Image (cartoon, rainbow, N blue to C red; front, top):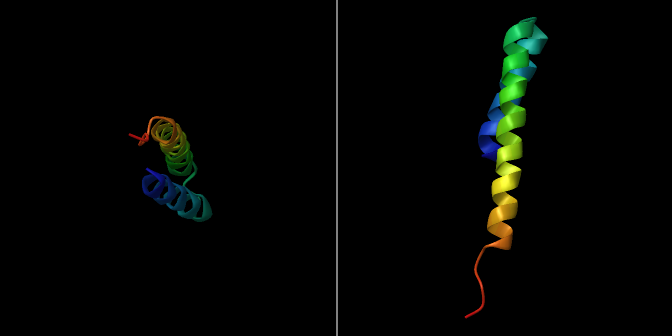
Length: 53
């Protein structure tokens, strides 16, 4: 998930640098959503991970 978030962030940065505002906004929005979903899944797996037998 963090890999996809990083990819969308890089796309947003490049698009913003080149002047494609709407594409940059869409990619930044997607990066933010994927990043937060990754954090939520990480926290869920952290608390419900392996238990001692």
